[in-house]
Image 1 (cartoon, rainbow, N blue to C red):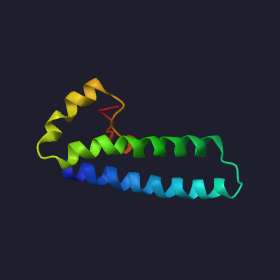
Image 2 (image 1 turned 180 degrees about the vertical axis):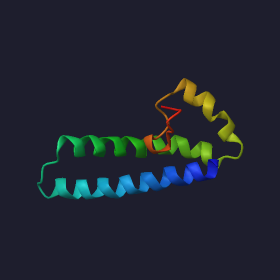
Image 3 (image 1 turned 90 degrees about the horizontal axis):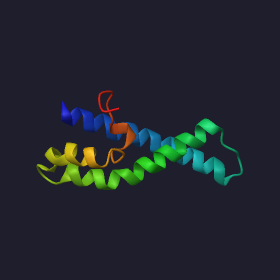
Image 4 (image 1 turned 45 degrees about the horizontal axis):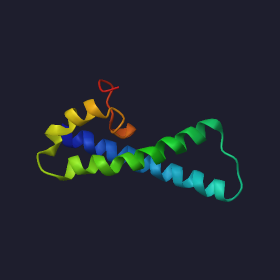
Length: 88
């Protein structure tokens, strides 16, 4: 179940990253983003920066047991694509 959760989170982050790359391409070519697109671009960029410390918990064996402790100390550490309804 946990593996499926991580797979879905990474899949959603990949989709958000592709959409954000298209938005950056549009920005570089002089187009203006809507407010909604701008917020989505900023959220995706923040998620990519949050991914680095989160990957340490995924890669290091048995470190995922400490994830709830770190989420209690740093509640905004988790990328938005990995949040569940109960964690929100």
